[in-house]
Image 1 (tube, rainbow, N blue to C red):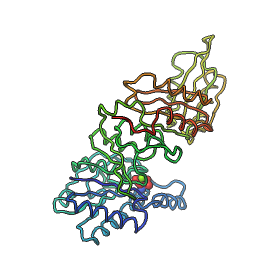
Image 2: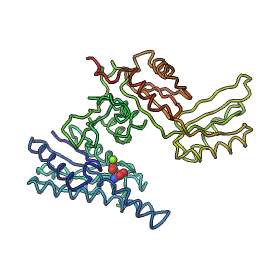
Image 3: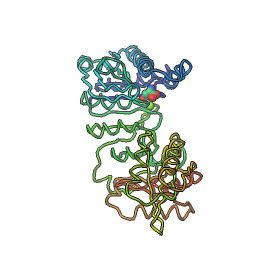
Image 4: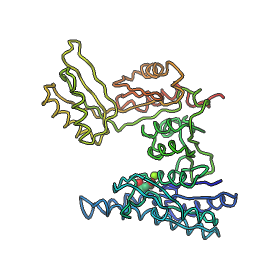
Length: 408
Ligand code: ASP
Ligand code: MG
């Protein structure tokens, strides 16, 4: 098999860890596999670089940031290659440019446009283990770019596609993807298999095992992913295209996000075009809106519009909303910060009925008030008071019996 293995910052966080990663790679080579390794910077390095830049200036130049940030992954790639070599296995490290990872021009958040991987393939054919520095590429001016925080996952998936790998293994410090946060619910169960869409929902909902964009790319190119631990030999969670078996289970996981705030504009005149104008202004301010709820009051003259945004953007969202309210004759705008979003996710929802009702019932039985609701084909989310987050996650995990292995 041709395997791409990505090791995150904790997996290469110390020299000891790098040596143990090298041993795992040697085992795979001894079993007859070809291996491409993609590494993150040693844990804490990227943050350390950002802190250094902040000591120099409040407004670091993006080009210079990228040159600096990309070096963390180069260090871990070279060290990993050395560690593999010292076990008697041929290995060679590559920068993003040497792998032919070409990105657009957007420094610090570049998108990969193409991966040629020609050199890398030549060395693989000659029996080398290729170790690729994650998180980086070059733009058409040959300037070093980085892919945004967590971007090494994306490097791994893009390289896996470019070399036609059989599987892309993402090594991390957890055993795989769980039915919910195991730190919150002791009976959380590791999932053997989930589909890309479920993984995307869980990732965007705050289950930060995999970087969302890497799952999107894996889905587009149909690259099978395995999320597994570099600290043991457990099989991990396979992330693949959905199949009939997955559809039998209505709910696969419960996610939560405490990082949300709610802005409400009260008494907005009920006229066409106002919502368009409001959300246009919000978008222009680069605020990421998640849920939106609008209520028409009984006299039909005014509506309340509420929407949720990440906590970090809430002050800006309130400001835009206050401006909008005074400009368009709405009463006022308010901000509620102590909310959380809990969500149930499952592709099986498409073919099961009553899933949302079961969720609301479980919350109601525990006296948890629902502030907002939103649904998609494979997800139901409720906004609740943040103080009930843990309780809500636990009762939903129980209600859908997620601790039990689904019967075949
Ligand atoms: N080192 C980069 C970061 O910390 C990229 C990565 O780890 O994937 O965000
Ligand atoms: Mg990471």
